[in-house]
Amino acid sequence: MSNNLQYIFGGPKAWDSGLWTASDDRVRGGSSISHLYTHPTQAKFYGHLDTKTLGGAGFASQRTVGDLALDLSCTEGIKLSLGWDSSDQTFTLNVKDTIPGKREDGRDEAGVSWEYDFKAPENGGEIFMKWDEFKATYRGREVEDPEPLKLNDIKRISLMARRQVSCV
Image 1 (cartoon, rainbow, N blue to C red):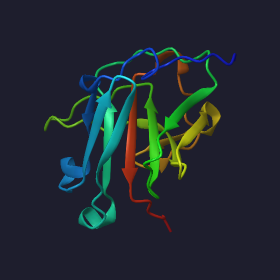
Image 2: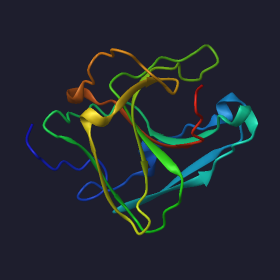
Image 3: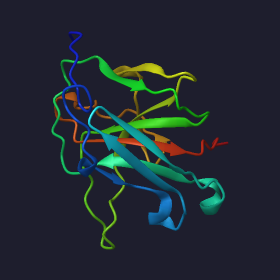
């Protein structure tokens, strides 16, 4: 793979709030809420993470809508440029190469996500996430022996804050 820089959002491609939607634990009866404020050159992800309802398994996320159909096969990963207004929260960047169907109640079915957990640098900065560092998960649990991530057809990206729960 070459070290090509391909903007997905920001840079010469303006951020567009119409390409994003909330996907919070409210769909399961929680009260977390997320927002994505966009400006052509940057976006701000913020909200409230409910860590009490749902047994502490709260999550607040924003995800892209539709099918991005991104070919990132000529890249080594994703670089995030983060501002100085950070928190101590661990965030998760998810990518999907399939879009799950809809349940009878209209909610998205669960599907495999490729996750990368990170903390924002205290004073802002860049985080580079190599593709081989993403973990395949299903409903937050790691998948054993997953099919490889189809980098030539990334369909969805999401940014999430959630309570990190240790499984014993």
